[in-house]
Length: 321
Length: 247
Ligand SMILES: Cc1cc2nc3c(=O)[nH]c(=O)nc-3n(C[C@H](O)[C@H](O)[C@H](O)COP(=O)(O)OP(=O)(O)OC[C@H]3O[C@@H](n4cnc5c(N)ncnc54)[C@H](O)[C@@H]3O)c2cc1C
Image: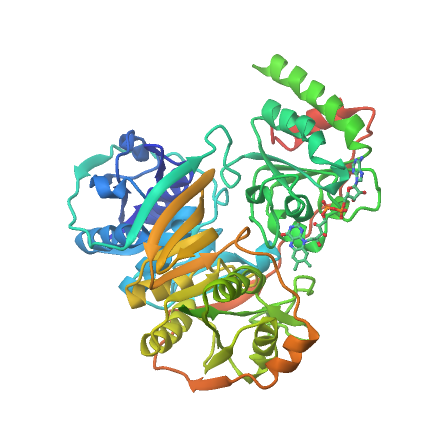
């Protein structure tokens, strides 16, 4: 038997989330005594890197038609691989691609799917996976009742353990179904770090007063190698792009470090960010609810504090590089 | 002229206190106000209505669940859907729900099947993609824009750090995210009209569950916030480095 992962790629390289899925699968495989196998689709290089996280075999489906994302075709390729490799568990990252492909595959294989897993499965008498629910306000233990189990792992939820093996890379040919879906164009904002993958996120809210004041937020993010995010009203009034909106009705993220600058900390905002490991709140109002969710707080004016923080982080980076 | 199906799910209001009953095995609905799942209402339903207003057609809302869901279904009708169907089935497993929707939709050929990108309670992001597979239809997830030209669709979809532009044609399935439309508030006329619009109840289709929630837990309480003086931000840098090990 095997544990199979779908390792996603972007611009011809495996994503950070692909390695997280590999890490999850190989930790599970060690527990169950199975082999961890990856499926990669399209034109991707650096496949041997998956060996670092315990993947011993990579099935590379290099069909050119998979260079573009088509969940129906990718699910078909993974289903074929799962049959060939006798896979009992299939692991995805709970990101844009996993959210598209995993449900297809679950219906195709009549398999129970747990999305947004935050821990390895408990396999003592059953197969139960802990997942985040109510946008991070609670967790549920979900039992999977079907012979094949599918899991998508929340980014940044599982500690990575390097487990060097040599990955055997196999060219894998699958005949794909024709589908009525054509990718016409991909508009990548490649200079930006993707929010769900970022270790550090600098987020700001209505306290910043206007879009013209985001320069210092971007600079702070740049100094820290962080992604930028915002509260919902800020995206709604068009100060920032929609894809930066985090919270219950935006993106749910769990970086290692989250800066909330001029954000009050409404329950709907906290729901999407309270999985962050460390939260720093900066707010003029000492009573702002964000301080109750924060690990560190500065009561102060963002226009005074953020420039000082930029300098302090710059000094820190210079001294520590 | 498109026949549009919008699938709506019930969700607890975003300000609800989340707690659990029966030895932490059940969500405690006591005192909880239920709403249409925001992604379904704000984006899928409203975009469906806009397309109908522009091109003609019909918008049916579909909900899987018990009679206690009827108020949110009536709200969807008040916002502007033409008619509604409720499949009288339990909703504790995504694949089971998807099988209900697919079985119904197969009997009633729709051109567009619109969903929200996920529910705000179980955050599954599962049902739409499952229905697509069960009906063998193209599926675009996390769509932020949908334009129809006759039966041809141009769709923008969020991807990691960018946007993908996709073309397909009816019938297809889409899950809607922010950007797709602006929320609408039902007016008095809509609310009155909704009372007499048809709401058909369909019995559950045969299917089995693929998952089961065993128990719920709450995240550990945060220890209290450590304050740093605004005049001494270097201290924050040092705490983040030495104590939190976050930088
Ligand atoms: C159904 C529903 C879903 C929602 N979903 C989301 C969601 O997903 N994400 C989300 O973010 N919100 C969401 N909201 C909105 C949420 O309730 C809040 O309204 C929103 O988060 C507030 O944004 P804010 O903190 O930027 O603005 P405000 O609440 O206006 O807060 C601004 C803060 O900035 C502080 N401030 C002002 N000036 C300064 C300064 N110079 N320096 C430092 N601090 C300053 C103020 O003290 C205040 O705390 C949702 C609401 C509803 C009803």
